[in-house]
Image (cartoon, rainbow, N blue to C red):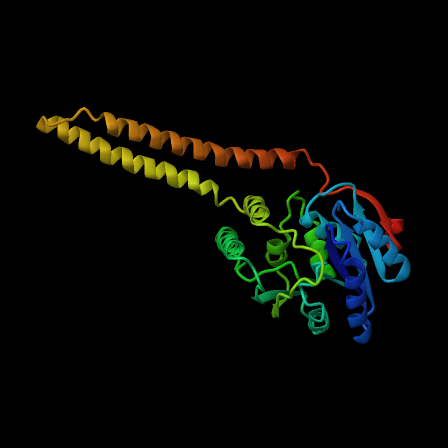
Length: 308
């Protein structure tokens, strides 16, 4: 059986259509399936739509969070509630083309354990959002040492890969990177991002920046090296200016140097504050992890997941 995990946040306009489209495609392909909608603390009637759809379709299940915990938590919860021999994660807005699920499933039948759908085209985006997305993927690729330039959450995982991901204990588990990090026999397929047919995108440039910071720091300690680089830079500046001051003193042309001293103090203060900020952010991440709070809290379920 194939489990299809569908994170949903304020997607009341898409629940019924998404269930209908994916169910029809999998039925035509003769693939036994379950659709697991995870309501990530929506403020609209998303959960009511999921409950209604589960009553109309036997293959639809639902998981409802007590509040908004984020997309990563929704993916984790959907995989935790899945029962299939493999699982696909797909966005509720159908911008991930659902017909690709069949292609991914056939590759799984051939023996592939992770099938990654990568973007050949990002679709229509504002210039600012496109620049922010490109910058984010460049940073995350450098930090994780994994090519994330065309990565997406649209993936199929074998049950072994699902269990490996679920065994990740960190609170902020970055699915897009960890699903590649776990290994297994992997293959990629291309897809073009489709236009949303209803509702509005939940991703803004601000949320993308927040998403980038959270996931880069949760997956890599590379930003901590900025502190080391700044320290080395400060040492070089100190040596250069120290040498200049000594030479001027020796030849008797030493200037008052008031401006230089002020600039050095400002530069040093800036470096120290940036360094403390980076270190403090990682300490806050450690603080969040050691509290060992759950990734999410489920308030209710519907469909076959009611017994969980």
